[in-house]
Length: 544
Image 1 (cartoon, rainbow, N blue to C red):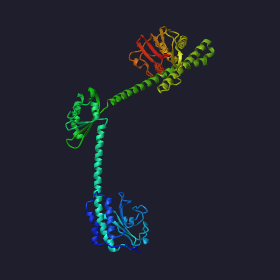
Image 2: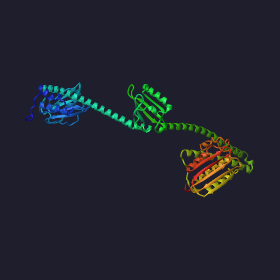
Image 3: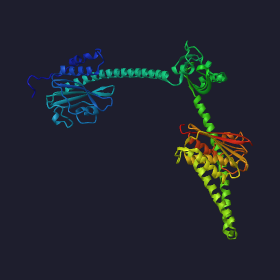
């Protein structure tokens, strides 16, 4: 039963034209929602008190958007609608055919949206072979839409769909134009931003190589001109020796379109630098040129340093090989003495006098001490090279007692055949040093002095003491150091050309230099071939 006063009048042909007459009128803002609302209201106005909804597929072609609704009771769906979901609307979208439920209670796919609905008619909105959405009509009457009503409404839906298609197509075109225009504007803005803020010097050139425009980095690299760069040839900035290379590169650009080369250029203040230059042809034919210049002088300097480091590595490999040979000899000599003395004691010890046995035992002791010293030196150099300071524990101490004790030990052993002369001057201040490191440092220098000078010659030790610093100079009158060897005396494993057959692994002065550096001191060596060597060591004093 219909509620009192509710009557449904069927559509006729005139109603279609009345309902769709607004389609030919220009839309105020091409507003899709306004058009859909007009469609829904036109159906309700001409057909009576029914509910009419316009629903469109989303861009993903899966979800359904409820764009507009009009009618006596405006149905509101309880669930979202998707293409493969339940309900008459989803069924219509999948099939592209009108779906009618004269009695919604009897239709298996009906989903309750409003309890007042008795019948529902869903008509597809088809245009250009594509389904845009549906017209959803619901009524509180059973079998409210007869065959004639459905035919007229399908014709109405066809015209509505065509209009919607045009609007959607126009909207799509406008959207594409808008997005492309925005993308172009953004691209132009990005290009402008890159051009203006690039750290590389950029210049736009015409086909003849004349400058049209430069960026701030160009002014920073080449210097700003009061009259600007426009009209000047960039070839004027190429250093004369590379000018012909630049001309050849510019000529070949129109065949290769992109060229990169390293040339010398004249920068700000007439400074010559190595430029990494990239030329790119813009557009077709005799188009403009984008020129990018980067100062790679630091990189070239780094490459030079790397080549030097590689050469140094090769030298180091050679020195290490030399060290292995030298160290093998240094180990073999005391080991031979130890083995020889041990065998003599083993086989003939009972026939030897007490003095002979003592002499062989001392040779064994000295051989072991020599091997131990060599091993300690190698370990110390290796630890220092790795940044390990070991047990370095500096403290404020007096130098004179330590040096006097060391000299007394040397006179009784290693330097017993040399004339050790020491002279102190200045105030007897203190040094901030590690006593073991300091003793080792002085022992190495004095050991070299005795080793490379003849027996009986003098070794002069002069010490100047003060609260601020202490200077120790040790001079011998031995064979000296050749000028070619002086720059390398602190290199690891290096043995000078004048050392000849004098035993040694080339580690003594390396250890001394490392120890001086640990004490934040300085060391200097002066020498003349066959005239002796002077080693000067400066150490911070108590107040230094």
